[in-house]
Image 1 (cartoon, rainbow, N blue to C red):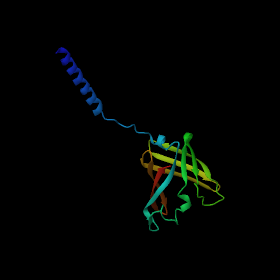
Image 2: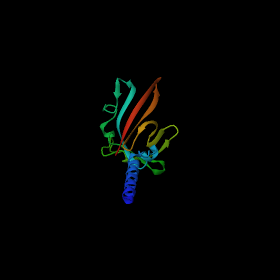
Image 3: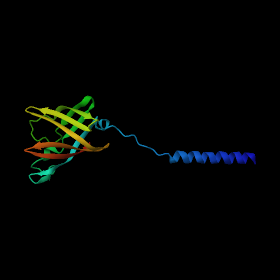
Image 4: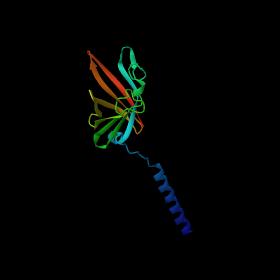
Length: 160
């Protein structure tokens, strides 16, 4: 009889222990945005602007603004803040190189991604304020003032 009571207590304790383990909530580790970006290639999949420019808000799907040959271009965020801007498979101008070198930096205090790359006769530095980011995509805004109007561009990127 004592062995049955001990066995019953042991069994009840085991069930209680298993219940406690199964009820423990798991909290997935949140990765730092820099860690998500670094070592990966990203392609722009959408660009909108507000207010509209010349009546257009979806500039990504307007071929007069974003040529189809640009839609396969990639931004590769390498370690050491080294950026490679890749022209993709469809190059707009056959005399353009396949890639352009650049730099990138993620400022965690401001949640900003600064991208810089250059080509002969052209330099481009953009500061993208990150709105949302996960393992597969991110979205951010760039604000530019032109002729007294402030435009907010929202860019969406997809990991490749």
